[in-house]
Length: 367
Picture 1 (tube, helix red, strand yellow):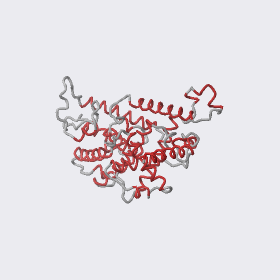
Picture 2 (cartoon, one colour):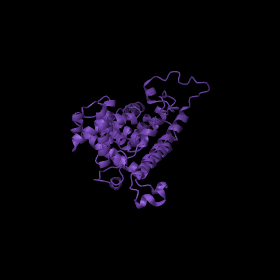
Picture 3 (cartoon, helix red, strand yellow):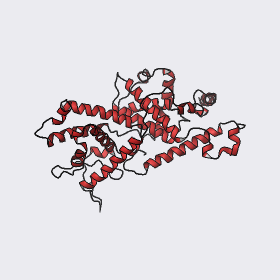
Picture 4 (cartoon, helix red, strand yellow):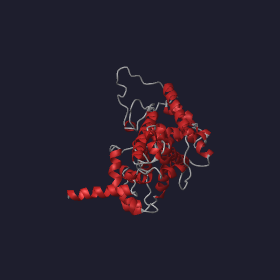
């Protein structure tokens, strides 16, 4: 499974998989070019740079834009309002899908809708197709047919691995622990942290949660959901919130309370997963997890050092990332994509219509 924790090689693996997928799609696209096309005859287009189509970075830019569009559609669901986890599921599906598929083959608008629809079911918040498409501004019947016809294809592409561990719940737990920690270390100043912001304890928790969820949703444009353990994702968000609230002493909380560097406090479970430890393990008591011969639990200082390095690497990813924060009508990459869509997968093309007609006739003969 692509979603794993603590795998330092995974970012480069993702890049290599996207490159392989891009080359395969461009080769298929090249086969669709007319034989007398000048560009198709020169040296056989064996050089990857000469293949027609988008490059991997352009594909990634388009996917990133549709993640932003997905959030805009997600926010339109007011009755009923979708849980935050649905968005986390859907974005992760879309990212995983486009690691092994190209936007030149499968247009991201339709796949984005399918991912969101399937995510509602997987996150135990199923919505009927008519209710779902009522939130789409136009072409509702067309998208309804596409979603229903591509749902199984998406499941197969995800290897039917649909459960996603998201950072939302870990963030809420960390915020509650942070406020409790601050009250404990400032016993003579009950609510001193909350008073600084002119709010009570409950209001402060709600404010941090709201801003933290917004930050998680923004950071989902990066690959953090594929390369970082959700608890570390949530912790990085909490640290980022603490940068605008110095008196919260978030880094001190992480060092002393989470990693256990404070000798007075009992250390909590480390957010640094060992090996391929899954998020499911976070829900269970850590009994006999160190029973392997020769295994030694790291000291609190070692945990803090490792976690600090991981948080720094996450912040570096975020600081270098070019986020989509406003919606253009159509980006340069999308305009280019219009000229390089594989006609066999384009539902508006004559080639697709002919292939579908042939398939329907074969099915009719079977009946």
